[in-house]
Image (cartoon, rainbow, N blue to C red; front, side, top):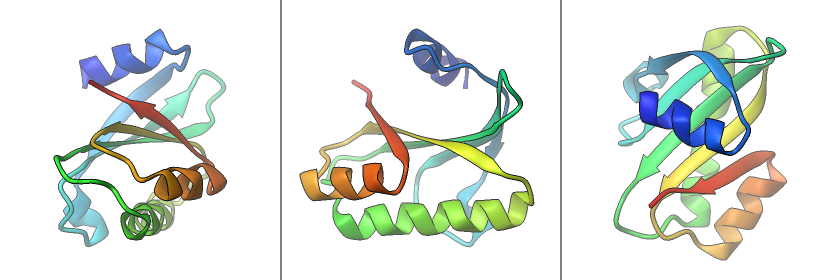
Length: 109
């Protein structure tokens, strides 16, 4: 988790109190890291970390948004910032869809 905090800090984003959430808690079998916390202004932020070898398509972008919606329902609070740290090839249409839904995408690696 320390490397995620440092990665975001290099880009001017400070998330405090990051807590790991297992995708199984949201009813998903996806292999990704989900971290929920708050920024300096106490606004909620969520960080999804996705590492895979195959390309991320539009279908998967919709699944990420569904997971986010489930997380909001589970957390009960308001989450304003959505960040996706991705180490995988990303389809341009999927990237456009994610940005349209309010995600900020950062490529690792």
